[in-house]
Length: 496
Image (cartoon, rainbow, N blue to C red):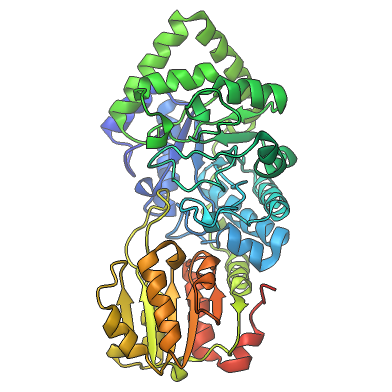
């Protein structure tokens, strides 16, 4: 599986495809400008290759959404779990699946089966359905059913579970030191209970499963002895991107791909870098030709791949009329409204006209697979304009918090609202939130991402959107603009 450089089938991309002849192509934001352009690119690649490769994408919903402009944007997993559990997960996945199918995509590398049991986890968070195993299992299974109904393959990730990690494997190899029994009863249980044709092992080290310090993606103890032997999984194993820094501490990329293939991986993914892709491909090709064991592994993997992926390797059917249907847009509006949750309440949430100050924290790109950077001030800016708040009452902050005393002075004795994004992971931001809460006449917090910002000391009134898709932001703004006090509160689900 390879990624390609851009949105066009240019000469460089043609040479890459002609040389490697990949089984699958994974699409990213850099490849997508509009539905029309994407469907045309998929058709041109299929025509050029003389067959349709399996087109894959990370389309989880929420913060990991590749299909944006011209597509229906669905809230992420934790928001879906809050909005209606399994039913909402199914509906969200069905919408995503229908729109993927409409442009010619075959395979969604989703859902996450990770149980986010470590609140310090920077790479998963609201990408997981829940901290609870049963809810993750039920919602992820429903997500798979929604994709399948739309004709899209699923892939459970990230085996054996990234929910307990602190490090992000894009940056370094996480180590999760728990017992094998704990893994089987918690992290691995969703993989065993959900019927999906593919698992994605990720670059993580589990000492209780491995005798050597190395990623599970190059470990025959995990990929072959444990997954195939002990767990009895007969589907396809797709490796997480081998460009990630957590993949290996001492192997080159070509060596890494062969080591993973020998250990039992079926599909090797290199998501970017034409030279890296070509060098790894050539190294693996030589190994298949010259090493009898590697050739045997090739035969074994191709049999498994053809059995699982063959239904998606046929003709190309595209229908852009399926995009952004009124039914889908209406469902997304409803899911966004239902996911806005009251977590703590000592006082009613004030309306905009009652606020003295709005504090909004800069969006932080904590998840490396989250493609769009920049600021996340839409709610605060739009809300302040609607309320005709004077400019000095809205405070747009980055992670450096250079004006803390000035901000605390502005908040003293006032009715204040803060929009946060993972403030609990940043000591300077959480300290400021505590001080603002202490000096305020009334302090309210709306977490635009992980709900654990509500646990910051001093926060007594907290709400969560579980994400910031455009519809979720619009819903939060409308709640503040249109309703005040108890009227507003009555519209919100209570976490408890």
